[in-house]
Length: 470
Picture (cartoon, rainbow, N blue to C red):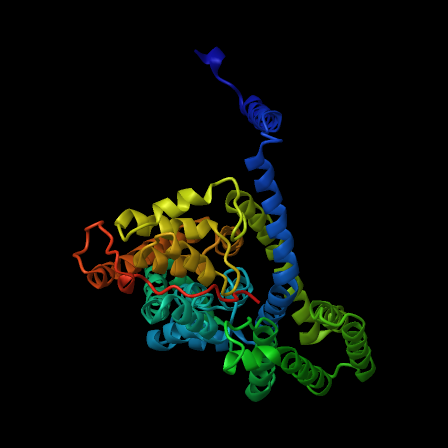
Protein backbone atom coordinates (compact mmCIF):
# COMPACT_ATOMS: atom_id res chain seq x y z
CA UNK A 1 0.00 0.00 0.00
CA UNK A 2 2.86 2.34 0.81
CA UNK A 3 4.32 1.77 -2.67
CA UNK A 4 1.30 3.60 -4.13
CA UNK A 5 1.95 6.69 -2.02
CA UNK A 6 3.40 9.53 -4.06
CA UNK A 7 5.82 11.99 -2.55
CA UNK A 8 5.01 15.72 -2.81
CA UNK A 9 7.52 16.32 -5.61
CA UNK A 10 5.91 13.68 -7.83
CA UNK A 11 2.41 15.03 -7.08
CA UNK A 12 3.58 18.51 -8.03
CA UNK A 13 4.96 17.25 -11.35
CA UNK A 14 1.76 15.32 -12.04
CA UNK A 15 -0.27 18.49 -11.49
CA UNK A 16 1.90 20.29 -14.01
CA UNK A 17 1.49 17.41 -16.45
CA UNK A 18 -2.29 17.43 -15.99
CA UNK A 19 -2.43 21.18 -16.60
CA UNK A 20 -0.31 20.92 -19.74
CA UNK A 21 -2.42 18.00 -20.99
CA UNK A 22 -5.63 19.95 -20.42
CA UNK A 23 -4.26 22.97 -22.27
CA UNK A 24 -3.07 20.79 -25.14
CA UNK A 25 -6.45 19.04 -25.40
CA UNK A 26 -8.30 22.36 -25.36
CA UNK A 27 -6.10 23.74 -28.14
CA UNK A 28 -6.17 20.48 -30.12
CA UNK A 29 -9.97 20.34 -30.17
CA UNK A 30 -10.62 24.06 -30.67
CA UNK A 31 -13.67 24.39 -32.93
CA UNK A 32 -11.88 26.84 -35.22
CA UNK A 33 -13.82 27.37 -38.43
CA UNK A 34 -17.27 26.94 -36.95
CA UNK A 35 -19.42 30.09 -37.24
CA UNK A 36 -20.34 30.18 -33.55
CA UNK A 37 -16.77 29.93 -32.27
CA UNK A 38 -15.26 32.27 -34.84
CA UNK A 39 -18.01 34.78 -34.18
CA UNK A 40 -17.41 34.57 -30.41
CA UNK A 41 -13.69 35.21 -30.86
CA UNK A 42 -14.46 38.18 -33.07
CA UNK A 43 -16.94 39.52 -30.52
CA UNK A 44 -14.40 39.18 -27.72
CA UNK A 45 -11.87 41.23 -29.66
CA UNK A 46 -14.47 43.76 -30.82
CA UNK A 47 -15.79 44.33 -27.29
CA UNK A 48 -12.27 44.70 -25.89
CA UNK A 49 -11.36 47.13 -28.67
CA UNK A 50 -14.52 49.15 -28.04
CA UNK A 51 -13.86 49.17 -24.30
CA UNK A 52 -10.29 50.36 -24.80
CA UNK A 53 -11.44 53.20 -27.07
CA UNK A 54 -14.51 54.32 -25.18
CA UNK A 55 -13.74 53.66 -21.51
CA UNK A 56 -10.07 53.46 -20.67
CA UNK A 57 -9.10 57.04 -21.55
CA UNK A 58 -12.25 58.94 -20.59
CA UNK A 59 -13.50 56.79 -17.69
CA UNK A 60 -10.71 54.81 -16.11
CA UNK A 61 -7.81 57.24 -16.29
CA UNK A 62 -9.68 60.07 -14.49
CA UNK A 63 -10.94 57.52 -11.95
CA UNK A 64 -7.36 56.38 -11.28
CA UNK A 65 -6.26 59.97 -10.66
CA UNK A 66 -9.21 60.54 -8.31
CA UNK A 67 -8.45 57.33 -6.41
CA UNK A 68 -4.79 58.31 -6.21
CA UNK A 69 -5.76 61.75 -4.93
CA UNK A 70 -7.89 60.15 -2.19
CA UNK A 71 -4.87 58.16 -1.02
CA UNK A 72 -2.44 61.08 -1.31
CA UNK A 73 -4.45 64.10 -0.14
CA UNK A 74 -7.19 62.80 2.16
CA UNK A 75 -6.17 61.77 5.67
CA UNK A 76 -7.27 58.42 7.01
CA UNK A 77 -8.87 60.20 9.95
CA UNK A 78 -11.12 62.18 7.62
CA UNK A 79 -12.28 59.07 5.79
CA UNK A 80 -12.87 57.27 9.07
CA UNK A 81 -14.89 60.18 10.44
CA UNK A 82 -17.51 59.91 7.70
CA UNK A 83 -17.23 56.35 6.36
CA UNK A 84 -15.33 54.38 8.99
CA UNK A 85 -16.67 51.43 11.01
CA UNK A 86 -17.23 53.69 14.04
CA UNK A 87 -18.92 56.52 12.10
CA UNK A 88 -22.66 57.07 12.75
CA UNK A 89 -24.44 54.54 10.55
CA UNK A 90 -27.04 57.00 9.10
CA UNK A 91 -24.18 59.28 8.04
CA UNK A 92 -21.85 56.58 6.75
CA UNK A 93 -24.45 54.60 4.80
CA UNK A 94 -26.24 57.74 3.64
CA UNK A 95 -23.05 59.13 2.13
CA UNK A 96 -22.03 55.76 0.68
CA UNK A 97 -25.39 54.96 -0.92
CA UNK A 98 -26.14 58.31 -2.61
CA UNK A 99 -22.69 59.75 -3.39
CA UNK A 100 -22.73 57.96 -6.75
CA UNK A 101 -25.64 60.13 -7.90
CA UNK A 102 -23.37 62.60 -9.69
CA UNK A 103 -21.09 59.93 -11.19
CA UNK A 104 -22.12 58.55 -14.58
CA UNK A 105 -19.79 55.56 -14.30
CA UNK A 106 -19.96 51.83 -14.93
CA UNK A 107 -19.07 49.02 -12.54
CA UNK A 108 -15.45 49.04 -13.72
CA UNK A 109 -14.87 52.77 -13.34
CA UNK A 110 -16.26 52.82 -9.80
CA UNK A 111 -13.71 50.20 -8.68
CA UNK A 112 -10.71 52.56 -8.33
CA UNK A 113 -12.87 54.94 -6.30
CA UNK A 114 -14.04 52.09 -4.07
CA UNK A 115 -10.48 50.87 -3.64
CA UNK A 116 -9.33 54.37 -2.72
CA UNK A 117 -11.82 54.95 0.09
CA UNK A 118 -11.61 51.35 1.36
CA UNK A 119 -7.83 51.39 1.65
CA UNK A 120 -7.97 54.75 3.39
CA UNK A 121 -10.07 53.30 6.20
CA UNK A 122 -13.69 53.37 5.05
CA UNK A 123 -15.81 50.67 6.66
CA UNK A 124 -16.61 47.66 4.52
CA UNK A 125 -20.35 48.36 4.81
CA UNK A 126 -20.39 52.02 3.61
CA UNK A 127 -17.76 51.26 0.94
CA UNK A 128 -19.88 48.35 -0.32
CA UNK A 129 -22.95 50.59 -0.40
CA UNK A 130 -21.04 53.01 -2.62
CA UNK A 131 -19.76 50.19 -4.83
CA UNK A 132 -23.25 48.76 -5.33
CA UNK A 133 -25.26 51.94 -5.85
CA UNK A 134 -22.67 54.06 -7.67
CA UNK A 135 -23.15 52.65 -11.20
CA UNK A 136 -26.95 52.35 -10.88
CA UNK A 137 -28.02 55.52 -9.06
CA UNK A 138 -26.58 58.27 -11.27
CA UNK A 139 -29.16 60.82 -12.40
CA UNK A 140 -28.72 60.13 -16.12
CA UNK A 141 -29.39 56.41 -15.71
CA UNK A 142 -32.53 56.94 -13.62
CA UNK A 143 -33.97 59.56 -15.99
CA UNK A 144 -33.27 57.45 -19.07
CA UNK A 145 -34.79 54.37 -17.42
CA UNK A 146 -37.97 56.28 -16.57
CA UNK A 147 -38.26 57.76 -20.07
CA UNK A 148 -37.64 54.55 -21.99
CA UNK A 149 -38.99 51.81 -19.71
CA UNK A 150 -41.59 53.74 -17.74
CA UNK A 151 -41.75 55.75 -14.52
CA UNK A 152 -42.49 52.63 -12.46
CA UNK A 153 -39.21 50.95 -13.34
CA UNK A 154 -37.31 54.24 -13.06
CA UNK A 155 -38.50 54.88 -9.51
CA UNK A 156 -38.10 51.22 -8.54
CA UNK A 157 -34.54 51.25 -9.83
CA UNK A 158 -33.64 54.36 -7.83
CA UNK A 159 -35.23 53.06 -4.63
CA UNK A 160 -33.83 49.57 -5.12
CA UNK A 161 -30.27 50.73 -5.78
CA UNK A 162 -30.17 52.88 -2.63
CA UNK A 163 -32.13 50.51 -0.40
CA UNK A 164 -30.33 47.34 -1.32
CA UNK A 165 -26.92 49.01 -1.24
CA UNK A 166 -27.57 49.80 2.43
CA UNK A 167 -28.87 46.26 3.08
CA UNK A 168 -25.88 44.62 1.41
CA UNK A 169 -23.50 46.99 3.18
CA UNK A 170 -25.00 46.18 6.57
CA UNK A 171 -24.80 42.45 5.84
CA UNK A 172 -21.17 42.69 4.77
CA UNK A 173 -20.32 44.66 7.91
CA UNK A 174 -22.14 42.07 10.05
CA UNK A 175 -20.54 39.04 8.42
CA UNK A 176 -17.02 40.47 8.64
CA UNK A 177 -17.57 42.38 11.89
CA UNK A 178 -14.42 41.00 13.55
CA UNK A 179 -12.18 42.41 10.83
CA UNK A 180 -14.07 45.71 10.98
CA UNK A 181 -13.47 45.93 14.73
CA UNK A 182 -9.77 45.39 14.20
CA UNK A 183 -9.71 48.11 11.55
CA UNK A 184 -11.56 50.49 13.87
CA UNK A 185 -9.10 49.77 16.71
CA UNK A 186 -6.12 50.51 14.45
CA UNK A 187 -7.74 53.73 13.23
CA UNK A 188 -8.42 54.93 16.77
CA UNK A 189 -4.78 54.33 17.68
CA UNK A 190 -3.57 56.30 14.65
CA UNK A 191 -2.71 59.92 15.47
CA UNK A 192 -4.51 62.78 13.74
CA UNK A 193 -2.20 64.26 11.08
CA UNK A 194 -1.03 67.76 11.72
CA UNK A 195 -1.10 70.59 9.21
CA UNK A 196 -2.14 69.59 5.71
CA UNK A 197 -4.04 71.44 3.05
CA UNK A 198 -7.10 73.49 4.03
CA UNK A 199 -10.40 71.66 3.69
CA UNK A 200 -11.71 74.28 1.24
CA UNK A 201 -8.80 73.66 -1.14
CA UNK A 202 -9.12 69.88 -0.92
CA UNK A 203 -12.88 70.04 -1.53
CA UNK A 204 -12.47 72.34 -4.53
CA UNK A 205 -9.70 70.14 -5.94
CA UNK A 206 -11.83 66.99 -5.76
CA UNK A 207 -14.86 68.85 -7.16
CA UNK A 208 -12.83 69.75 -10.26
CA UNK A 209 -11.53 66.19 -10.70
CA UNK A 210 -15.03 64.72 -10.36
CA UNK A 211 -16.42 67.38 -12.68
CA UNK A 212 -13.91 66.41 -15.37
CA UNK A 213 -14.90 62.74 -15.00
CA UNK A 214 -18.63 63.52 -15.14
CA UNK A 215 -18.67 65.93 -18.07
CA UNK A 216 -16.15 64.02 -20.18
CA UNK A 217 -18.48 61.00 -19.97
CA UNK A 218 -21.81 62.80 -20.28
CA UNK A 219 -23.99 60.58 -22.49
CA UNK A 220 -26.03 61.67 -25.47
CA UNK A 221 -29.66 62.42 -24.62
CA UNK A 222 -32.57 60.67 -26.32
CA UNK A 223 -33.95 64.07 -27.37
CA UNK A 224 -32.26 67.03 -29.03
CA UNK A 225 -33.74 69.59 -26.63
CA UNK A 226 -33.77 69.96 -22.87
CA UNK A 227 -31.22 70.22 -20.10
CA UNK A 228 -29.35 66.95 -20.76
CA UNK A 229 -29.07 67.69 -24.47
CA UNK A 230 -27.80 71.20 -23.73
CA UNK A 231 -25.13 69.86 -21.38
CA UNK A 232 -24.12 67.21 -23.91
CA UNK A 233 -23.65 69.83 -26.63
CA UNK A 234 -21.27 71.83 -24.42
CA UNK A 235 -19.64 69.03 -22.43
CA UNK A 236 -16.18 69.44 -23.97
CA UNK A 237 -16.24 73.18 -23.44
CA UNK A 238 -17.09 72.62 -19.78
CA UNK A 239 -14.43 69.88 -19.50
CA UNK A 240 -11.84 72.23 -21.03
CA UNK A 241 -12.72 74.99 -18.55
CA UNK A 242 -12.43 72.55 -15.65
CA UNK A 243 -9.05 71.46 -17.03
CA UNK A 244 -7.92 75.09 -17.01
CA UNK A 245 -9.09 75.43 -13.40
CA UNK A 246 -7.14 72.27 -12.50
CA UNK A 247 -4.01 73.67 -14.14
CA UNK A 248 -4.38 76.86 -12.09
CA UNK A 249 -4.73 74.83 -8.90
CA UNK A 250 -1.59 72.86 -9.72
CA UNK A 251 0.29 76.11 -10.24
CA UNK A 252 -0.99 78.04 -7.23
CA UNK A 253 -1.53 75.31 -4.61
CA UNK A 254 0.94 72.60 -5.62
CA UNK A 255 3.66 74.96 -6.88
CA UNK A 256 4.12 73.25 -10.22
CA UNK A 257 6.37 75.05 -12.70
CA UNK A 258 4.32 77.39 -14.87
CA UNK A 259 6.36 76.63 -18.00
CA UNK A 260 5.75 72.89 -17.71
CA UNK A 261 2.03 73.46 -17.21
CA UNK A 262 1.99 75.76 -20.24
CA UNK A 263 3.78 73.10 -22.31
CA UNK A 264 1.10 70.53 -21.47
CA UNK A 265 -1.68 73.02 -22.26
CA UNK A 266 -0.13 73.91 -25.63
CA UNK A 267 0.31 70.23 -26.56
CA UNK A 268 -3.33 69.56 -25.65
CA UNK A 269 -4.61 72.50 -27.72
CA UNK A 270 -2.48 71.54 -30.73
CA UNK A 271 -3.79 67.98 -30.59
CA UNK A 272 -7.39 69.24 -30.41
CA UNK A 273 -6.84 71.46 -33.45
CA UNK A 274 -5.05 68.75 -35.42
CA UNK A 275 -7.72 66.12 -34.66
CA UNK A 276 -11.08 67.88 -34.64
CA UNK A 277 -13.98 65.62 -33.77
CA UNK A 278 -11.73 63.24 -31.80
CA UNK A 279 -11.73 64.63 -28.25
CA UNK A 280 -10.28 61.44 -26.79
CA UNK A 281 -6.81 62.25 -28.15
CA UNK A 282 -6.37 65.71 -26.59
CA UNK A 283 -7.83 64.30 -23.37
CA UNK A 284 -5.19 61.55 -23.44
CA UNK A 285 -2.45 64.12 -24.11
CA UNK A 286 -3.63 66.10 -21.07
CA UNK A 287 -3.62 62.98 -18.88
CA UNK A 288 -0.12 62.02 -20.03
CA UNK A 289 0.94 65.60 -19.40
CA UNK A 290 -0.36 65.35 -15.83
CA UNK A 291 1.70 62.19 -15.40
CA UNK A 292 4.76 64.06 -16.70
CA UNK A 293 4.13 66.89 -14.23
CA UNK A 294 3.76 64.65 -11.18
CA UNK A 295 6.05 61.65 -11.78
CA UNK A 296 9.25 61.76 -9.76
CA UNK A 297 8.27 64.78 -7.67
CA UNK A 298 8.80 64.93 -3.95
CA UNK A 299 5.94 65.29 -1.50
CA UNK A 300 2.22 64.85 -2.05
CA UNK A 301 2.31 65.49 -5.81
CA UNK A 302 4.71 62.59 -6.35
CA UNK A 303 2.66 60.45 -4.00
CA UNK A 304 -0.42 61.29 -6.09
CA UNK A 305 1.23 59.90 -9.21
CA UNK A 306 2.54 56.81 -7.41
CA UNK A 307 -0.89 55.95 -6.03
CA UNK A 308 -2.63 56.48 -9.38
CA UNK A 309 0.00 54.34 -11.13
CA UNK A 310 -0.42 51.54 -8.57
CA UNK A 311 -4.17 51.45 -9.23
CA UNK A 312 -3.54 51.41 -12.97
CA UNK A 313 -1.16 48.45 -12.78
CA UNK A 314 -3.51 46.49 -10.55
CA UNK A 315 -6.81 47.09 -12.31
CA UNK A 316 -6.28 47.55 -16.06
CA UNK A 317 -5.00 44.02 -16.91
CA UNK A 318 -7.84 42.37 -14.97
CA UNK A 319 -10.47 44.60 -16.56
CA UNK A 320 -9.28 44.00 -20.11
CA UNK A 321 -9.08 40.25 -19.48
CA UNK A 322 -12.57 40.21 -17.99
CA UNK A 323 -14.02 42.19 -20.89
CA UNK A 324 -12.40 39.76 -23.32
CA UNK A 325 -14.04 36.77 -21.60
CA UNK A 326 -17.41 38.54 -21.33
CA UNK A 327 -17.35 39.36 -25.05
CA UNK A 328 -16.48 35.76 -25.92
CA UNK A 329 -19.37 34.36 -23.88
CA UNK A 330 -22.13 36.88 -24.60
CA UNK A 331 -20.88 39.23 -27.32
CA UNK A 332 -21.81 42.87 -27.71
CA UNK A 333 -25.36 44.25 -27.63
CA UNK A 334 -27.00 43.10 -30.84
CA UNK A 335 -24.32 40.48 -31.50
CA UNK A 336 -23.90 36.96 -30.20
CA UNK A 337 -21.04 35.19 -28.47
CA UNK A 338 -20.78 31.52 -27.58
CA UNK A 339 -24.04 31.63 -25.61
CA UNK A 340 -27.04 32.19 -27.96
CA UNK A 341 -29.08 35.26 -27.07
CA UNK A 342 -32.32 33.29 -27.58
CA UNK A 343 -31.44 31.20 -24.54
CA UNK A 344 -31.30 34.29 -22.37
CA UNK A 345 -34.46 35.81 -23.84
CA UNK A 346 -36.40 32.59 -23.28
CA UNK A 347 -35.26 32.31 -19.65
CA UNK A 348 -36.22 35.84 -18.56
CA UNK A 349 -39.81 35.84 -19.80
CA UNK A 350 -42.64 36.39 -17.31
CA UNK A 351 -42.14 37.22 -13.63
CA UNK A 352 -41.40 33.86 -12.06
CA UNK A 353 -38.81 33.25 -9.36
CA UNK A 354 -36.62 31.41 -11.85
CA UNK A 355 -36.70 34.23 -14.40
CA UNK A 356 -35.82 36.82 -11.74
CA UNK A 357 -32.97 34.69 -10.46
CA UNK A 358 -31.62 34.05 -13.94
CA UNK A 359 -31.79 37.76 -14.80
CA UNK A 360 -29.83 38.67 -11.67
CA UNK A 361 -27.18 35.97 -12.25
CA UNK A 362 -26.79 36.52 -16.00
CA UNK A 363 -26.31 40.24 -15.41
CA UNK A 364 -23.08 39.43 -13.57
CA UNK A 365 -21.51 37.99 -16.72
CA UNK A 366 -22.61 40.78 -19.03
CA UNK A 367 -20.71 44.02 -19.36
CA UNK A 368 -22.86 47.15 -19.31
CA UNK A 369 -21.26 50.45 -20.23
CA UNK A 370 -22.73 53.60 -18.72
CA UNK A 371 -26.44 53.90 -19.72
CA UNK A 372 -26.29 51.04 -22.25
CA UNK A 373 -28.20 48.75 -19.88
CA UNK A 374 -31.40 50.70 -20.69
CA UNK A 375 -31.61 49.94 -24.45
CA UNK A 376 -30.46 46.36 -23.75
CA UNK A 377 -33.29 45.81 -21.27
CA UNK A 378 -35.65 47.58 -23.67
CA UNK A 379 -34.85 45.03 -26.36
CA UNK A 380 -35.40 42.16 -23.92
CA UNK A 381 -38.71 43.69 -22.83
CA UNK A 382 -39.76 43.72 -26.46
CA UNK A 383 -38.97 39.99 -26.56
CA UNK A 384 -41.25 39.28 -23.59
CA UNK A 385 -39.10 40.03 -20.55
CA UNK A 386 -41.21 40.66 -17.43
CA UNK A 387 -41.10 43.68 -15.13
CA UNK A 388 -39.42 41.76 -12.31
CA UNK A 389 -36.52 40.35 -14.35
CA UNK A 390 -36.14 43.77 -16.00
CA UNK A 391 -35.57 45.41 -12.64
CA UNK A 392 -33.33 42.55 -11.45
CA UNK A 393 -31.14 43.05 -14.53
CA UNK A 394 -31.13 46.84 -14.12
CA UNK A 395 -29.90 46.45 -10.55
CA UNK A 396 -27.45 43.56 -11.01
CA UNK A 397 -26.15 44.43 -14.48
CA UNK A 398 -24.51 47.84 -13.90
CA UNK A 399 -23.35 46.90 -10.40
CA UNK A 400 -21.88 43.54 -11.46
CA UNK A 401 -19.66 42.38 -14.28
CA UNK A 402 -17.08 39.69 -14.80
CA UNK A 403 -14.24 42.24 -15.08
CA UNK A 404 -15.41 43.89 -11.84
CA UNK A 405 -15.39 40.53 -10.04
CA UNK A 406 -11.77 39.90 -11.03
CA UNK A 407 -10.64 43.33 -9.86
CA UNK A 408 -12.68 43.22 -6.65
CA UNK A 409 -11.09 39.89 -5.77
CA UNK A 410 -7.66 41.53 -5.91
CA UNK A 411 -8.81 44.36 -3.62
CA UNK A 412 -10.78 42.65 -0.84
CA UNK A 413 -10.00 38.95 -1.39
CA UNK A 414 -12.08 35.98 -2.56
CA UNK A 415 -14.13 35.55 0.63
CA UNK A 416 -15.53 39.10 0.63
CA UNK A 417 -15.92 39.07 -3.15
CA UNK A 418 -17.94 35.86 -3.09
CA UNK A 419 -20.12 37.04 -0.20
CA UNK A 420 -20.76 40.39 -1.87
CA UNK A 421 -21.79 38.90 -5.19
CA UNK A 422 -24.08 36.32 -3.58
CA UNK A 423 -25.79 39.16 -1.71
CA UNK A 424 -26.11 41.22 -4.88
CA UNK A 425 -27.71 38.34 -6.76
CA UNK A 426 -30.15 37.69 -3.94
CA UNK A 427 -31.15 41.33 -3.50
CA UNK A 428 -31.58 41.89 -7.23
CA UNK A 429 -33.76 38.78 -7.38
CA UNK A 430 -35.83 39.84 -4.34
CA UNK A 431 -36.38 43.36 -5.64
CA UNK A 432 -37.44 42.01 -9.01
CA UNK A 433 -39.95 39.75 -7.27
CA UNK A 434 -41.21 42.81 -5.41
CA UNK A 435 -42.52 44.16 -8.70
CA UNK A 436 -44.21 40.90 -9.57
CA UNK A 437 -47.57 41.45 -7.82
CA UNK A 438 -47.88 44.99 -9.17
CA UNK A 439 -46.99 43.89 -12.68
CA UNK A 440 -49.49 41.05 -12.53
CA UNK A 441 -52.27 43.32 -11.26
CA UNK A 442 -51.56 45.73 -14.11
CA UNK A 443 -52.07 42.88 -16.52
CA UNK A 444 -55.35 42.02 -14.83
CA UNK A 445 -54.68 38.60 -13.30
CA UNK A 446 -53.17 37.34 -10.04
CA UNK A 447 -49.51 36.66 -9.50
CA UNK A 448 -48.40 33.24 -10.62
CA UNK A 449 -50.71 33.05 -13.63
CA UNK A 450 -48.59 32.72 -16.75
CA UNK A 451 -51.25 33.90 -19.19
CA UNK A 452 -50.54 37.14 -21.06
CA UNK A 453 -53.13 39.84 -21.39
CA UNK A 454 -53.20 40.79 -25.08
CA UNK A 455 -54.26 44.37 -24.29
CA UNK A 456 -51.18 46.52 -25.12
CA UNK A 457 -52.14 49.02 -22.42
CA UNK A 458 -50.99 46.52 -19.81
CA UNK A 459 -47.57 45.95 -21.36
CA UNK A 460 -44.43 47.76 -20.26
CA UNK A 461 -44.07 50.95 -22.20
CA UNK A 462 -41.85 50.57 -25.24
CA UNK A 463 -40.27 53.51 -27.00
CA UNK A 464 -37.78 53.84 -29.83
CA UNK A 465 -34.24 52.92 -28.84
CA UNK A 466 -32.51 55.72 -27.01
CA UNK A 467 -28.91 56.74 -27.35
CA UNK A 468 -27.05 55.09 -24.51
CA UNK A 469 -23.45 55.12 -23.52
CA UNK A 470 -21.25 58.07 -24.11
